[in-house]
Image 1 (cartoon, rainbow, N blue to C red):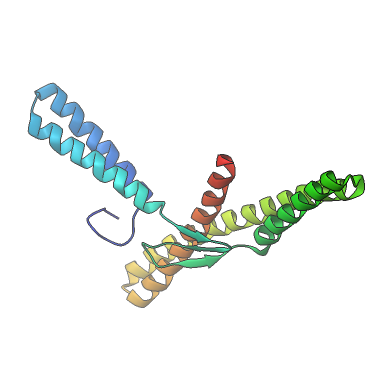
Image 2 (cartoon, helix red, strand yellow):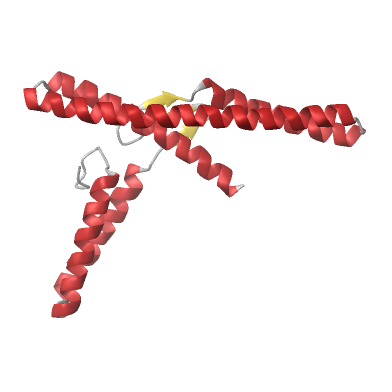
Length: 180
């Protein structure tokens, strides 16, 4: 769980590193020691890198991949269909406006709204599944570690990583929507 080159970047570890960096910085400001301040700055930079690494995902259509863990997941079908319905609805609305067909325009508005609702339903499903898988994976990994079962640990780590990737895929879509 550290940023020393291990493959599993961790948001939690980034918070720990950030707190340690803040404490080191406070000590350095009291003592006036430039070496302590440099160490504090390095720890804070490490925390920032760890945070960014833990949120790295590659999104291509309905697929999300985590380059750190290698996990890849497919979006819930409602997300994909909802996005498609929004696109088709917007096109109908535009064409209806262009040709002066009020029925086509209204149909497009409705299909777009239905698509947004359908996509949100899929996002909630994927987010819930991601959080659940992360928790199951973490707990299963702990149980397997206690018993020394390396094969089970690997299996539970995969469950955790897929959940994290699914959750990050939803977050990426939501950020993209906010930027529009």
